Image 1 (cartoon, rainbow, N blue to C red):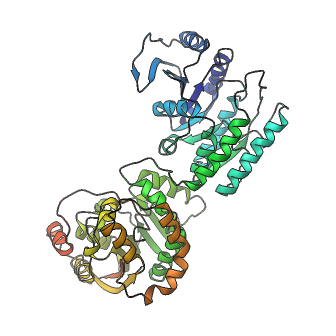
Image 2 (cartoon, helix red, strand yellow):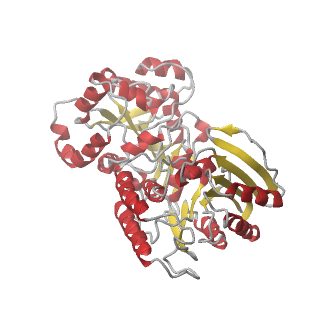
Image 3 (tube, helix red, strand yellow):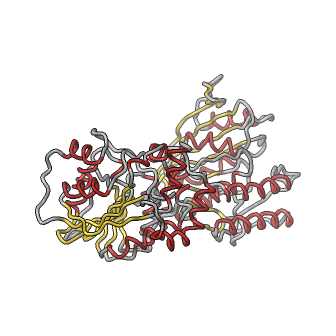
Length: 531
C-alpha cells in the first residue's frame, strides 16, 4: 500500500474542472492506495472556475475559507478530508503558468507518490491506478502514461499536433538516451521525495521536457504504461499551441546543457551532480583501486554509484551513504544485481556499519575522512569492519598548503601529507601496504582555482574539459613534475587491535584538523580529487 498526491493546475476550466476532479474518486477503489491527497491550484482564473471549485469542495464537506491566509502569493481556500481522500484548494493571486502551479501544489504534497493531473477531460484517472501498480511491483522512480503506446482508447484528431509531440519526444530521447514514446504526456508520476529534490524552473509547458531530462540525468528508473487519451480541439479549449512547441525546442537544448538537477541541500547534492559529469575521471580512479579490491567489499560514501558500477560484480558488495537521495539512486542498482546491497553508513558511527560473515575483505573509503572532525575514530571504525586479513583503500586530498576556497566549499576539514596519513593509519591499527600518488595534473589547477583565484564552485566547462582530457592525463600523469593532488593508501590491519583512547585530540593533532564532534556531509563523493 502507498499514498498518492495528485497535483492539479487549473486555469479557466469552469466547464470541465468539476467533472475532472470528480473522476479522481475512482481511485478510492485502488487496492494499492491507502490515501489520496488532491492539491488543486487555481492559477488566478479569470472565468467562474473559482465558484465551481467552491461548490465542488462544499459537496465534499470541505470548508471554503473567505479571504484565506496568503503566503508568497498563494491563498489557502479550503482543506478537508472525506474517507480516503484529502482535498486541498489553493489559489494564485497572480497567474504564474502551469509550472509555477505545479511547484505550488508540490510544496503541499505529502504522499509517497505525486502525479500531475490536468483539469480537463483528456486523461482518465482510471489509468492512475495502473500507474501506481507499477511503482508497487517494479520499484519505479517515475512512471509516464504514454498516449502513443497503445492504450484502450485514443481519440483520433490533430495529426500535425501529434507529429510535433513525437518530434519533441525524439529530440528528448536523443539528449537523454532514454527510449520514451511520449515525453509530453501530462501523466508523469514520480516519487515525491525525488520530485521535490529536483529544481523545477519552468513556468509553462516547458515543464515537460525539463522534468523528463532532469529525471534522466538523476538516473531515475523510468517506466511507461499505455493510457487512454481523449484529446480536445482548440475550439473545445485546448491551450498548448505551436509557440509552446518552439519554446520546448529551446528548453530541450537548455536542460540538455544544464546540470542543475538537485535542489540546494545540506549534503551538497548539486556539487555532486556537476562533478559526476566526469565519468572518465571516475573510471581512472576505479582502475587504480580495482586491483586491491577483494570479493566482500564495503564502499563508504558511494554517492550515486559512480564507482560502484565500475567495481562490481563481487561476491558481496555493500554500497553506502548518508544522503537519502543517493541511497534511493543506489537502491535502483540492486534490482538486477543480487550481490549488491545498499545501507546507510556513517563513517563516524561504528554501530551504523553493516556486517558480513567473516568480515569485509575490502573497505573502500574515498574522499571521506577529510570531511569529519574525528578522522582517527573514523579509520578505527573502518578497521573494526575489516577481516583480519582484509585491507582498506583510503583516498585523501594531499597538501595542506593547497587548502583554499574549493576545500571550504567541499567541506574539507584538512588536507594530508604522506607522513600525517601514515601516522593516522598507524594509530588506527593499520600498516601501510602501498601509498599511491594520484592525479598530479590536478595540483596546479587546484592551486589556481582554490588558492589564487579563490573560486567557490566548479565550472561546468572545467568539468567537461577534465572528462575530455582524462585519457591524456592518465598517460602523462606519472611523468609530471608536480606533487599529487590526492594520496591513496592501501592499508592492512596490524595484528593487535588499536587502543580506543584519545581518538579526537590525536586525530586533530596528527592531521592539522580541528577537534570537535559531528559530521560534515560529503558533497563530492567519488570525484572531489578532480581538478
